[in-house]
Amino acid sequence: MAKTGLLITSSLSRVPFVLQAARQHVWKTLYIQIEPKSTNIQNIPTYSCAINRIYASSSIHCSSLDVRVLITNLRGQRVQRLSQQVDVLMFDAAVPHAEATLLAEGLQAPSVVKLDQHESVTDQGVFEEAEDNLKMHDNVVLGGTFDRLHMGHKILLSNAVLRTKKRLVVGVTDATMVKSKKLPELILPVSQRINDVTNFLKDIDHSLKYEVVPIADPFGPTATDPDMDLIVVSQETLRGGEKVNELRQKNNLNTLDIYCIKMLELEPDVEDKETKISSSNQRMDLLGTRIREPEIKPHLEMHPYLIGLVGGIASGKSIMCERFKRFGAAVIDCDKLAHSLYEPGTECFRALEAHFGSGIVGADGRIDRKVLGSIVFSHKEKLEELNGIVWPKLLDAVKIRIGEIRAQGQHSVVFIEAAVLIKAQWQNQVHEVWSLIIPPEEAVKRLRERNNLTEEEAKMRIESQLSNECLVQHSNVVFSSLWSYEFTEKQAVRAWEMLMKTISPEVTSKI
Image (cartoon, rainbow, N blue to C red; front, side, top):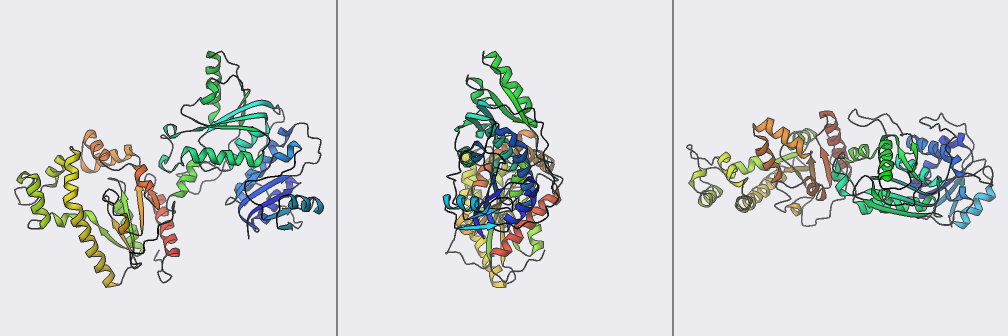
């Protein structure tokens, strides 16, 4: 199977079939070239409806592929360069074989495949578009987050390209503008998103001038650029387009024509998701998958396979560990293990009493963790002092427990539930790090309910932790318990099944 393919089609009614057929030949990127019925192209926006329908069909029939519908040829120019080498060129029955062969030679595609004529399948999710907005403009602008380009993004960007004669400006929201988004910690860096948008635009039409820029407010260059004619928006950002014109009027600039794209709807697989194709849904789909591959750590034995589970207070680590126990893993609870280190007569007990004073010892002769907590959570340096005493002894205890589990030989996977793992720099002590994140405001709410704390006390505890962004940066797999129990369970099952496929063959899932 080829990595990248180019599909030539001249019949919209065949699109669902040829997409399914092309999926059998290509596994990553599929370029699609529409063959116009006439080479005398007067107005390329007439292809909006066709391109929208192709992307809508792609979301149904080959959603795993990076589909890119080319526009360069619709301007009467030959497609001469693409960002990826085409490995196979495919064409449907209505495209002349000689024409397909000629294009394959130009793109140096080593393989040419004719897709046989079949009856077309029923298409769904197609767009109907009024034919009264086909005007083209010299300078067009649009904006968005553009995190992990999906079919909705591609429809928005393609319609902007179709209506542009010379210059297309795209504003991409920077880190300051994405904090209110769902799972903002999983949003790609703005530099990568800018690169992805630029690459897509140059692929589908290399004849235009593109300016893809970061924006730190909703208006970006539209607030000051006098050379703009049209703004392209979606249904949910239409009001934003109107606000742009209000600001331009105040700044004595021309108002922009507005072109609005219909949303690409879908039936969500879980009720927690949005009923449209969106980056938020895509980020939710990342939960329970590997967002980065684990590093090879030859100093660690492969059995048992060690996974550090991290997360903030009230993020759901304990419930997640219970799931993995049910699936067949062993779990080391570092919080409980640390409690044993605080027992009277232990080396750790004596060190803590000597350092923080006898005031941390209660009437029962045990360390009063609430008193100790009030000291360390309000003074950063005191917390660091506590950690410097406890963490090395805790790691020694964890290693002893791992050795016991290995000797028993009953578990091939061990989860080490350790909120401190990253701060203590224990990443090299485990094969992978998996994390649980929830928004800070949700963590405060849960902590107040669970521990009967004031809002100020809860916030102080949350702020003393590593940020979600830091957790994600160090994680191979990320979960979130923000939504329903069932959706969090689904994340855990997905991660476990993935793990079973990648570690020792003899490990069998117990789900």
